[in-house]
Image 1 (cartoon, rainbow, N blue to C red):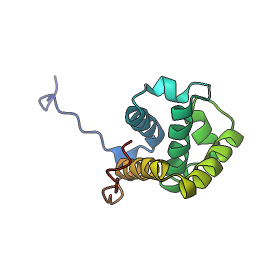
Image 2 (cartoon, rainbow, N blue to C red):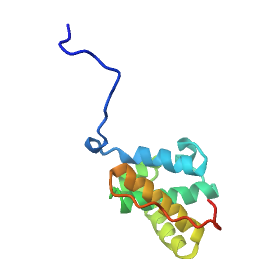
Image 3 (cartoon, rainbow, N blue to C red):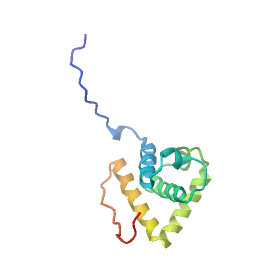
Image 4 (tube, rainbow, N blue to C red):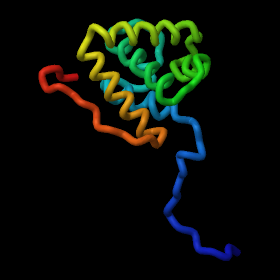
Length: 129
């Protein structure tokens, strides 16, 4: 017999677990209106490529994950693909304001997942996502 009564409440302390990448995959897929499976699937569908690049920026800059770990989270790609996605994202941020807004949104979500102080992303109304 149990000494304490059971309750329906379960508290999960996310700070004890460092499995943030799956949460970020789900969030980025939701932003793009696709499933997580579509996001990590092979292929070069334009919107998915941009979402993966934004994911890579957040995984490296906010979550400080290693290339191999990011590659596994992105469907088992190799680490070189993730390095290229990161470089692509950095170049694209310099020239594409819409992509820069997407990255800022993904970075804000990544910071919220890891428990950092989050400033709301600035999204210009003339560039809807």
